[in-house]
Length: 399
View 1 (tube, rainbow, N blue to C red):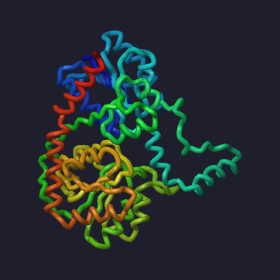
View 2: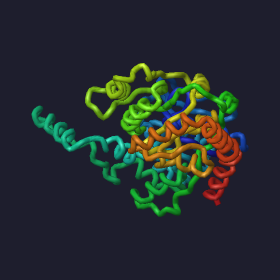
View 3: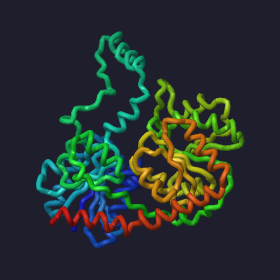
View 4: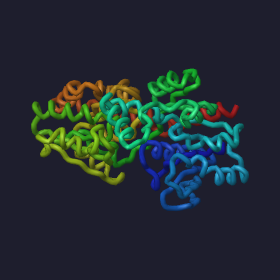
């Protein structure tokens, strides 16, 4: 098969999150299986076509995510006219392949669900109180302007995420829960959405980490933002430190805005936990330094309000760390059937705290769960298993 992956994100130029990691691994897996693969992506610094490990990457110079789907069209058409593709795959998020599909409607399209904008907005805006909304609208009024209520959901007719998903011949969801949410919200027949987990190729630097550990460090890895459950985690940390005052908490990742005006999430956490600053540390690390973070960690905590299929959880599983994770979304699929961690209600700080304390008190349980999690990575999410599944559904589409 000749396969094109259309994605604004692709490493190393545009590695913002899980989409870049997924497309990189999908391209490598399909190339290894003998397929002809090309990736069409963006870069903030260069226009270039390059060969990498058997597949081509076309990078266009742009930082405009909204218009990327239009800007990538000309180079895609040039390649398509040289040698046609059998199918294209695009994320639903920001609809990277929308212009191509509209221009070439007969070209089979697979949409890979990640996390649509409507779901991100629903979570992030859940912390806006009625008073916050009134203040925002009044601030426009006193300036003689009309401020649109940004928290209102887009109409489906103007939502690119919805449009590209409706045009797809196949829709793949990494988790059962995301498929259910999208089916209900966009009124898609549930049988149109196929569950295909992300493939994951763990670094030996992670799988070689000794599971036996005793550091007293609890680590959060990921962007510091509202939807990751950090508001509730801050409340849980206060409870944990009452019982385990020597526990240290590390936050590893870039910083986003908090729900408090004028404070980013790092600043909010420092204010909220101002009596425990000696127990906290914040850092950003390069990708090749991540294994050292997990090596020094006893417990990873990912209390996301909702999460699709987070790469950080896959990393922690590979490292054999004990995990406390939000039960909504893909981490339920990842951890529940293998007893690979403790699943919690991310909106209940006491439940988060109880899970962390339980693992701090029980090294045997930490080792057992870490072992189970690593085994699942190696046997279920490996590139052979997921690659076979992806290839099967691609071939079904072309019959």
